[in-house]
Image 1: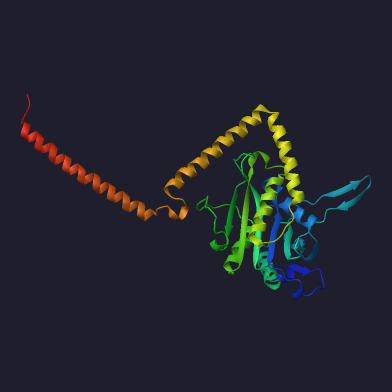
Image 2: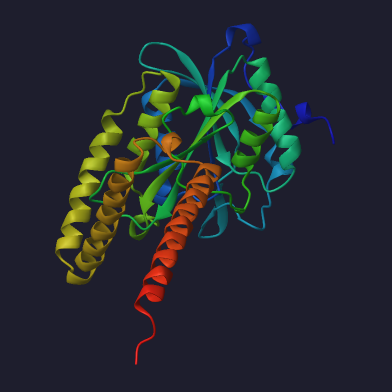
Length: 321
């Protein structure tokens, strides 16, 4: 592997000691991001909190320009602009003046391992203790119900109240996922939040999902992040969605079906909670097996007694004509 440190360069003369911050938020475009959740979150943070660029990455080594061609503007007889892609590490301050970092830009197409190692080196050099990532995933859920979240982390203690919704599965990889994995191997803390976005709203902007992401980041990090503008945008977006649903019987029927499905799922979870209020209280496979064996033994014993009784009765009564 080539030297990972050559992938980035610092964009400030400020010393590393003065740039320290304990939190890094990762919001890289390119992977699944239903409702443009992470883009809305990143744009909101940069618009509402003071920021400076701390470091930039060499995108010429990381991006496939032909795979996702940057936009250019042609006017009459000449090229007038080029949307130069950039992968940047920003340093922001929250409403209390506490600093944190934000990594934005396109997800790398190449050199994932080298890029991950470069990011880990920056994390160590800048004193980051917790890395947080967010993105939206399309789900068969209605927009009229609370937004769900799938949380994951390098250590279960970081998400103590998390209720596991999925078992083991294989999914297409992402650079952010690889970074979290590498941080776990290095013994460093990282959390990821996948925000559940109604699948019928996944193609456009869905600010309500970005608000949910912002709230999760705030809770996980303790940062005091402004949510006013984002919450206002979510409110206006919700009014427009409700209007469009009301204007279409077909869409309204789809939403109603999703509501019934969602409510049935919650009811099922409530029934389960009557048996075990927490997932950790559910019996293990060994315990279930032992109970089942005991049940079969009881049934067998009862059957033997019944058979003996029936045999005795038959002998007493003698043959019938």
